[in-house]
Length: 131
Image 1 (cartoon, rainbow, N blue to C red):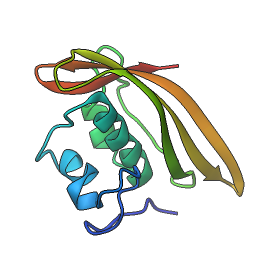
Image 2 (image 1 turned 135 degrees about the horizontal axis):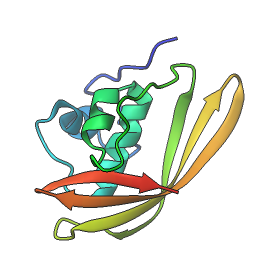
Image 3 (image 1 turned 180 degrees about the vertical axis):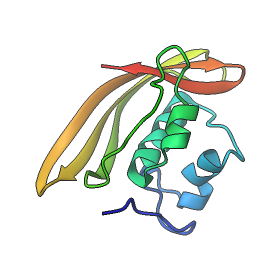
Image 4 (image 1 turned 120 degrees about the vertical axis):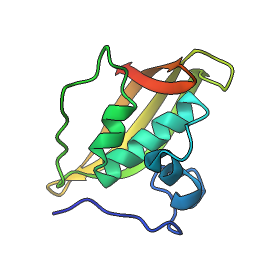
């Protein structure tokens, strides 16, 4: 199985309400930077959906980033629910995003719940860690 590749006009997998071309695609392509921790969280979720490991590694803080990342193409991410955000705005230097990411694997539904920490460094939001 391979990862889905949304068209620019498709609804963005992060469920922001925007098209992929007007949302996460621009961050993945490097033509824009996520302005908030939540926007980075959404774009990273979409990178998991599309199998974009380069983007995931590029937006992972060097202090916690793994040397490499391998994603399971049989795991299908279905829905992202943002539960809460703490700071992480355009003028902040740190933020936290709590979310639930729903998936399906081998015919079984599951949910990953996480509280992710982000930091803004040199004008770019980066993922630090999650619990």
